[in-house]
Image 1 (spheres, rainbow, N blue to C red):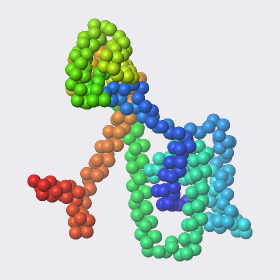
Image 2: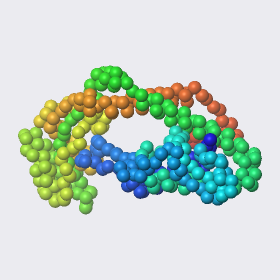
Image 3: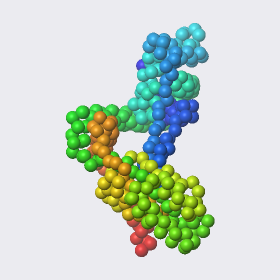
Image 4: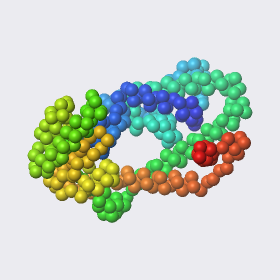
Amino acid sequence: MFRLYLALLLASASFAQSKAVAQTGEFSRPLAATSPSSPHSAQNVPSAKQSTSDPASTLLPTDTVVTIHGLCSDIGIGSAPADSNSCITRIKKADFDIFVESLRASGQRIPQELTPELRRTIAQTYVESLTFEEAGRKAGLDHDARFLTAMKGIRIVLLSRMYQFQMEQNAKQVSQADVETYYRENPAKFEQLELTHLVIPTNNPTNLRDEEFHAKAEQLAQELRNRLAAGEDADKLEKEAFEKLSQKSPPATKLLPARRGDYSLDQEEKLFALKPGEVTPVVKLPSVYVVYKLISRRTIPLDEAKDEISLKLATERLERETKARKDAVHADYDSRYFGPSPSAASAASKAGAN
């Protein structure tokens, strides 16, 4: 028998996760190369990794992992009745593991592989909750009308979260046939371009009204565009442009591989119309001139694309089911109690402004 405590579910687990981030150094991976239009944004947030030498791997499910001295209650997760004389409550590894899995099922973002530090944080917070829970029961708060009402609300929230978790797991069951069908029906989505580019600033950073700089930059952009098309090296041209404009630190010319959706529609149309070796006209962006050159293009093979397709199909399934559930329900809110809806308030505000 075990009970899920609201304090642990909604506060403690999230605190433990934030502590794990600090301990394991989760991070966002920066771009390998950049462009003015920022076509790629790659993030990698790894889960906490369990050490291969983790002594937890030697424990049996029946081994006690938490021993609580001074707690006589048998209300803890999977705990046997406490020792009658010494008031000791013991929690087995199997019960603690099931408890952690229940936190995940309730929507808590807890890594699949836990560090010993994160396990300890969860366990310590759980023990603290048990300590005050026992005191609350002795004070009779478990019969308080507010507590009983709150427990009904907790049940609703918890079942909702667990069902959404189940929806997510079900949506991930994407068949190989579905993956192959999507790949076959959407060939354009898997075209990939290898690009290089020139970036030439339009403004003098020390004097934005420097018209002579503007004119020189515009002329230089067109000249270097023609030389890039003629086959000259992009890095050499980029360096030359910055030297002529008395600017420092020219950016990298090589870009991350480009896919449809990485650039604005007008740029995408120009880029995917190129043949290898061709360059675009000079593209004027707010603070730079840009020229793109296509080095090569390829179609990503199915083996490389299958994980991406599986994730996309799973996401679409989950979105459809979520929308269907929400669309099947409609609620009216009494404005005398809740005030006007945000949409109605916004419409009234716009009407008043006109």
